[in-house]
Image 1 (cartoon, rainbow, N blue to C red):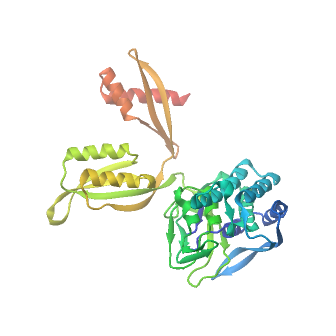
Image 2: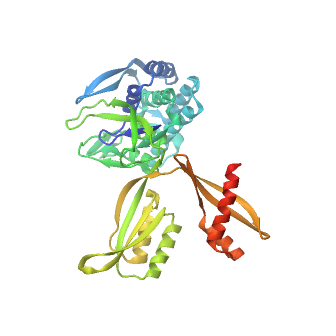
Image 3: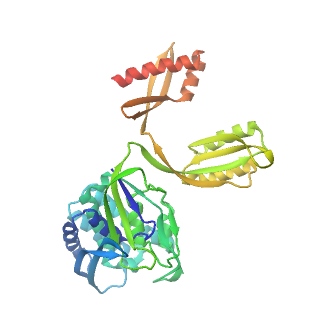
Amino acid sequence: MVIVIDPQIAGISGDMLLSSLVNLGADKNKIIEGIEKSQKFLSGSTIKKMDFQKIQKRGIESTQLILEMDENVSERKGVEIKKAILDSVNELSLTTKAKIFAESCIDTLISSESKIHGISENSVHFHEASSIDTLVDIVGITIALDDLKLFKEKIVCLPISVGGGNVSFSHGTMSNPASAVLQIFKNSNLNIQGNNSKEELTTPTGACILVNLTNEPIQHYPSMNVSSIGYGAGQKDFEGFSNVLKIIQGNQSNFDMDSVKILETNIDDISGEILGHLIDKIMEQGAKDVSIYPGITKKGRPTNLVCVICDDVKVDTIIDTLVLETGTLGIRISNSNRFIVPRSNHNFSLTFDGKSFEVNYKKSSHNGKTHFKIEFDDLKNMSNALDKPIVDIESFLRKEIEKIEEI
């Protein structure tokens, strides 16, 4: 099972995510009852009405949170909100994963404010996030995820729309996205993108919940059979699009999937020795793969196309290496989703001709067939130590592996 969160157009807020989970099938009565039990932990705030209703958002029937409350506070310490959330999830008999998730969400929100203002986490005061609706969002979403048993599922996220223009809040006016949203996404693999809406589309609460829910970005929908869809409506209405968050649940193929960066550049003035050194250096820096292809470019010039596959976090380091080692003047970057055959790492020790060896191999399975890939360096070391051809060593080790796997 895979869960796809789609905030590409309307972004994400706590109430939109909560509403989409209810639309997906979470028990709204369980959520409302849980919130009613939780409000006692936050003095100065009273929920007068809470419900979920069906609403049309520019032709899309979706679920929207209705929340009416009385509050006589304009700010609260972050640790006060945290204590109320922890007291709530502990009283509600939620699973351990749910409790850890709720605590991580509020910790992320507090930590972002701490770093932005250069103060300790114990000194953080919330203004916009001081309302009881922060508790409603985090505790409500935790209940909904637990009810749907989604903590056990694979969750991925498409690029997150943050909007554009300016945003005004307790500290004044600044360009959108606000510092808290940027700080929350800073150490996440998730991708953000702006648009022309001139509105805040992703809130700090929505961001902190999202980064604790998944750290797996995708650029396109995975290959999947859709089983259910949840539509969660935001409070605002926009001219050009439906202010609706989508959550899609379905069955994915037997392949794993991830998202990688592909770096490409054409090199036409360096030797093969340097290209060989380049491959070794880039692989040492954490690239997933490096390929070099011969070709012909403008004016009939022979060239080498260098293609590197890597994670987001390795991009800057590898670009520096490409420029410094080759003198290239430009590098193309693209995103790509990969289907990956599930595999596992294994090793065993053996003694041959009085010499001991450690052998590492990968095991993969697909459609009932199992394949073994022996680490080439281990083959080479054993071949050199025994003065035997690599093909003979590989044949021998495959038989040993087959014996092990039969046990």
